Amino acid sequence: MAPSFHSLAALQLARRVLCWTGASLLIFTGTAAQAASATIAVAANFAEPMRALAALLEQTTSHRLQISVGATGRLYAQIRNGAPFDVFLAADTRAPAQLETDGLAVPGTRFTYATGQLVLWSAQSGLVDSQGAVLKTDRFRKLAIANPKTAPYGAAALEVMTQLGLSDALTPKLVQGESIGQAYNFTFTGNAELGFVALSQVLVGGQLKSGSMWKVPPALYTPIRQDAVLLQRGASNAAALALLALLRSPPGQAVIQSFGYAV
Image (tube, rainbow, N blue to C red; front, top):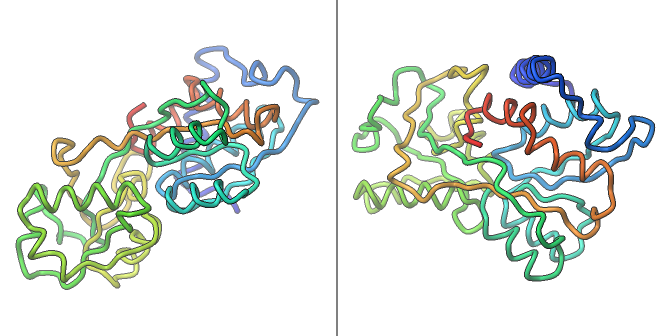
Protein backbone atom coordinates (compact mmCIF):
# COMPACT_ATOMS: atom_id res chain seq x y z
CA MET A 1 0.00 0.00 0.00
CA ALA A 2 1.38 3.41 -0.96
CA PRO A 3 1.94 5.84 1.92
CA SER A 4 -0.83 8.43 2.36
CA PHE A 5 -0.20 12.16 2.30
CA HIS A 6 -0.22 12.06 6.11
CA SER A 7 2.26 9.19 6.19
CA LEU A 8 4.58 11.02 3.79
CA ALA A 9 4.46 14.15 5.96
CA ALA A 10 5.30 12.07 9.02
CA LEU A 11 8.20 10.43 7.20
CA GLN A 12 9.57 13.83 6.18
CA LEU A 13 9.34 14.98 9.80
CA ALA A 14 11.14 11.88 11.03
CA ARG A 15 13.91 12.35 8.48
CA ARG A 16 14.41 15.91 9.68
CA VAL A 17 14.66 14.68 13.25
CA LEU A 18 17.26 12.12 12.17
CA CYS A 19 19.30 14.90 10.55
CA TRP A 20 18.96 17.18 13.56
CA THR A 21 20.06 14.55 16.05
CA GLY A 22 22.66 12.85 13.86
CA ALA A 23 21.09 9.54 14.91
CA SER A 24 20.96 6.44 12.74
CA LEU A 25 18.39 3.71 13.11
CA LEU A 26 21.10 1.23 12.21
CA ILE A 27 22.15 1.27 15.85
CA PHE A 28 18.98 -0.70 16.61
CA THR A 29 20.06 -3.73 14.61
CA GLY A 30 23.78 -3.46 13.94
CA THR A 31 23.91 -3.52 10.14
CA ALA A 32 21.48 -3.14 7.29
CA ALA A 33 22.81 -6.40 5.82
CA GLN A 34 21.04 -8.32 8.61
CA ALA A 35 17.59 -7.30 7.38
CA ALA A 36 14.69 -9.29 8.80
CA SER A 37 10.90 -9.29 8.71
CA ALA A 38 8.34 -9.30 11.51
CA THR A 39 4.56 -9.50 11.81
CA ILE A 40 2.96 -6.79 13.94
CA ALA A 41 -0.51 -6.80 15.53
CA VAL A 42 -1.69 -3.18 15.67
CA ALA A 43 -4.75 -1.59 17.27
CA ALA A 44 -6.95 0.00 14.61
CA ASN A 45 -6.48 3.58 15.83
CA PHE A 46 -2.72 3.30 15.25
CA ALA A 47 -2.89 1.85 11.73
CA GLU A 48 -1.79 4.98 9.86
CA PRO A 49 1.10 5.89 12.22
CA MET A 50 2.24 2.27 12.07
CA ARG A 51 2.42 2.38 8.27
CA ALA A 52 4.54 5.53 8.47
CA LEU A 53 6.83 3.95 11.05
CA ALA A 54 7.14 0.75 9.01
CA ALA A 55 8.14 2.75 5.93
CA LEU A 56 10.72 4.68 7.94
CA LEU A 57 12.14 1.47 9.43
CA GLU A 58 12.43 -0.16 6.02
CA GLN A 59 14.13 2.88 4.49
CA THR A 60 16.68 3.17 7.28
CA THR A 61 17.39 -0.49 8.17
CA SER A 62 15.89 -2.60 5.33
CA HIS A 63 13.76 -4.46 7.90
CA ARG A 64 10.24 -5.19 6.69
CA LEU A 65 7.05 -5.31 8.74
CA GLN A 66 3.80 -7.09 7.99
CA ILE A 67 0.95 -5.23 9.70
CA SER A 68 -2.30 -6.81 10.91
CA VAL A 69 -4.88 -4.24 12.10
CA GLY A 70 -7.87 -4.87 14.36
CA ALA A 71 -9.59 -4.21 17.64
CA THR A 72 -7.33 -4.73 20.65
CA GLY A 73 -9.56 -7.39 22.20
CA ARG A 74 -9.81 -9.28 18.94
CA LEU A 75 -6.03 -9.21 18.39
CA TYR A 76 -5.46 -10.37 21.98
CA ALA A 77 -7.75 -13.34 21.38
CA GLN A 78 -5.89 -14.18 18.16
CA ILE A 79 -2.56 -14.11 20.00
CA ARG A 80 -3.97 -16.38 22.71
CA ASN A 81 -5.06 -18.76 19.95
CA GLY A 82 -1.61 -18.94 18.40
CA ALA A 83 -1.64 -16.20 15.74
CA PRO A 84 1.95 -15.73 14.44
CA PHE A 85 2.64 -12.18 15.66
CA ASP A 86 6.01 -10.89 16.85
CA VAL A 87 4.94 -7.58 18.44
CA PHE A 88 1.60 -6.36 19.81
CA LEU A 89 0.74 -2.65 19.76
CA ALA A 90 -2.47 -2.42 21.77
CA ALA A 91 -4.85 0.44 22.49
CA ASP A 92 -4.77 -0.27 26.21
CA THR A 93 -2.44 -1.49 28.96
CA ARG A 94 -4.48 -4.46 30.10
CA ALA A 95 -4.13 -6.78 27.10
CA PRO A 96 -0.30 -6.60 26.87
CA ALA A 97 -0.02 -7.05 30.64
CA GLN A 98 -2.24 -10.14 30.51
CA LEU A 99 -0.10 -11.60 27.75
CA GLU A 100 2.92 -11.24 30.05
CA THR A 101 0.99 -13.05 32.77
CA ASP A 102 -0.01 -15.74 30.28
CA GLY A 103 3.63 -16.31 29.34
CA LEU A 104 3.01 -15.25 25.73
CA ALA A 105 5.03 -12.00 25.93
CA VAL A 106 8.65 -11.40 26.87
CA PRO A 107 8.80 -10.09 30.47
CA GLY A 108 10.11 -6.56 30.87
CA THR A 109 9.45 -5.48 27.27
CA ARG A 110 6.09 -3.80 27.82
CA PHE A 111 5.94 0.02 27.68
CA THR A 112 3.54 2.83 26.79
CA TYR A 113 4.26 4.01 23.25
CA ALA A 114 1.41 6.54 22.95
CA THR A 115 -1.54 8.10 24.76
CA GLY A 116 -4.59 8.50 22.56
CA GLN A 117 -7.09 11.33 22.26
CA LEU A 118 -10.82 10.74 21.76
CA VAL A 119 -12.76 13.11 19.50
CA LEU A 120 -16.34 13.52 18.38
CA TRP A 121 -16.19 13.88 14.61
CA SER A 122 -18.50 14.37 11.66
CA ALA A 123 -17.74 14.30 7.96
CA GLN A 124 -20.08 17.30 7.71
CA SER A 125 -18.49 20.72 8.16
CA GLY A 126 -20.12 22.74 10.91
CA LEU A 127 -22.15 19.93 12.46
CA VAL A 128 -19.90 19.41 15.48
CA ASP A 129 -19.35 22.50 17.65
CA SER A 130 -16.36 23.25 19.86
CA GLN A 131 -18.16 22.07 23.01
CA GLY A 132 -19.82 18.92 21.70
CA ALA A 133 -23.26 20.39 22.37
CA VAL A 134 -24.57 18.73 19.20
CA LEU A 135 -24.91 15.54 21.26
CA LYS A 136 -27.83 17.17 23.09
CA THR A 137 -29.70 18.05 19.89
CA ASP A 138 -31.81 16.23 17.30
CA ARG A 139 -29.48 17.21 14.44
CA PHE A 140 -28.28 13.63 13.96
CA ARG A 141 -29.82 10.16 13.77
CA LYS A 142 -26.82 7.88 14.34
CA LEU A 143 -23.68 8.00 16.50
CA ALA A 144 -20.88 5.54 15.72
CA ILE A 145 -18.64 4.04 18.39
CA ALA A 146 -16.25 1.10 18.52
CA ASN A 147 -17.30 -2.04 20.38
CA PRO A 148 -16.53 -1.17 24.02
CA LYS A 149 -15.92 -4.83 24.83
CA THR A 150 -12.99 -5.15 22.42
CA ALA A 151 -11.92 -1.55 21.65
CA PRO A 152 -10.65 0.82 24.37
CA TYR A 153 -11.79 3.86 22.37
CA GLY A 154 -15.32 2.45 22.44
CA ALA A 155 -15.12 2.03 26.21
CA ALA A 156 -13.91 5.64 26.47
CA ALA A 157 -16.88 6.80 24.37
CA LEU A 158 -19.30 5.15 26.81
CA GLU A 159 -17.52 6.86 29.69
CA VAL A 160 -17.99 10.23 28.01
CA MET A 161 -21.69 9.61 27.44
CA THR A 162 -22.10 8.68 31.10
CA GLN A 163 -20.12 11.67 32.36
CA LEU A 164 -22.30 13.99 30.26
CA GLY A 165 -25.48 12.35 31.53
CA LEU A 166 -26.48 11.41 27.96
CA SER A 167 -26.36 7.60 28.03
CA ASP A 168 -30.13 7.09 27.99
CA ALA A 169 -30.65 9.62 25.22
CA LEU A 170 -27.80 8.41 22.99
CA THR A 171 -27.97 4.62 23.38
CA PRO A 172 -30.83 4.20 20.85
CA LYS A 173 -28.77 6.13 18.29
CA LEU A 174 -25.59 4.06 18.59
CA VAL A 175 -24.06 2.25 15.62
CA GLN A 176 -21.33 -0.07 16.83
CA GLY A 177 -18.23 -1.04 14.85
CA GLU A 178 -15.95 -3.91 15.73
CA SER A 179 -12.99 -1.52 15.90
CA ILE A 180 -12.33 2.21 15.93
CA GLY A 181 -11.45 1.85 12.25
CA GLN A 182 -14.94 0.61 11.47
CA ALA A 183 -16.51 3.34 13.63
CA TYR A 184 -14.56 5.89 11.58
CA ASN A 185 -15.74 4.31 8.32
CA PHE A 186 -19.38 4.48 9.45
CA THR A 187 -18.94 8.19 10.10
CA PHE A 188 -16.86 8.92 7.00
CA THR A 189 -19.44 7.34 4.70
CA GLY A 190 -22.36 9.12 6.38
CA ASN A 191 -23.98 5.96 7.73
CA ALA A 192 -23.65 7.79 11.04
CA GLU A 193 -23.63 11.58 11.14
CA LEU A 194 -21.41 11.56 14.25
CA GLY A 195 -18.75 9.25 15.58
CA PHE A 196 -16.46 8.95 18.57
CA VAL A 197 -13.11 8.24 16.89
CA ALA A 198 -9.38 8.69 17.48
CA LEU A 199 -7.82 12.09 16.85
CA SER A 200 -5.16 10.34 14.75
CA GLN A 201 -7.83 9.28 12.25
CA VAL A 202 -8.97 12.81 11.38
CA LEU A 203 -5.69 14.76 11.24
CA VAL A 204 -3.39 15.49 8.33
CA GLY A 205 -0.17 17.29 9.21
CA GLY A 206 -1.64 18.24 12.57
CA GLN A 207 -4.75 19.81 11.00
CA LEU A 208 -8.31 18.52 10.68
CA LYS A 209 -8.47 16.99 7.20
CA SER A 210 -12.23 17.38 6.72
CA GLY A 211 -15.54 17.80 8.50
CA SER A 212 -15.89 19.11 12.05
CA MET A 213 -14.81 17.82 15.45
CA TRP A 214 -14.76 18.30 19.20
CA LYS A 215 -11.69 17.22 21.15
CA VAL A 216 -13.22 15.48 24.13
CA PRO A 217 -11.71 16.82 27.39
CA PRO A 218 -9.44 14.12 28.87
CA ALA A 219 -11.17 14.55 32.24
CA LEU A 220 -14.27 12.86 30.80
CA TYR A 221 -12.62 9.46 30.24
CA THR A 222 -9.87 7.23 31.54
CA PRO A 223 -6.56 8.04 29.79
CA ILE A 224 -6.10 5.84 26.74
CA ARG A 225 -2.58 4.62 27.43
CA GLN A 226 -1.45 2.33 24.63
CA ASP A 227 1.15 -0.31 25.44
CA ALA A 228 3.47 -2.28 23.18
CA VAL A 229 4.98 -5.63 24.07
CA LEU A 230 7.40 -8.08 22.45
CA LEU A 231 5.76 -11.47 22.01
CA GLN A 232 7.64 -14.70 22.61
CA ARG A 233 7.63 -15.50 18.89
CA GLY A 234 9.58 -12.29 18.22
CA ALA A 235 12.04 -12.56 21.10
CA SER A 236 15.06 -12.93 18.79
CA ASN A 237 13.61 -11.18 15.71
CA ALA A 238 15.81 -8.26 14.67
CA ALA A 239 12.97 -6.44 12.91
CA ALA A 240 10.70 -6.72 15.95
CA LEU A 241 13.44 -5.43 18.25
CA ALA A 242 14.17 -2.58 15.85
CA LEU A 243 10.52 -1.52 15.80
CA LEU A 244 10.36 -1.38 19.61
CA ALA A 245 13.53 0.71 19.66
CA LEU A 246 12.12 3.03 17.00
CA LEU A 247 8.93 3.57 19.01
CA ARG A 248 11.03 4.83 21.93
CA SER A 249 13.43 6.94 19.86
CA PRO A 250 13.13 10.68 19.09
CA PRO A 251 12.47 10.01 15.37
CA GLY A 252 9.74 7.49 16.18
CA GLN A 253 8.15 9.73 18.79
CA ALA A 254 8.13 12.62 16.34
CA VAL A 255 6.10 10.50 13.93
CA ILE A 256 3.70 9.43 16.70
CA GLN A 257 3.18 13.00 17.89
CA SER A 258 2.49 14.17 14.34
CA PHE A 259 -0.62 12.00 14.39
CA GLY A 260 -2.02 13.67 17.51
CA TYR A 261 -0.77 11.34 20.22
CA ALA A 262 1.09 12.17 23.40
CA VAL A 263 4.27 10.13 24.00
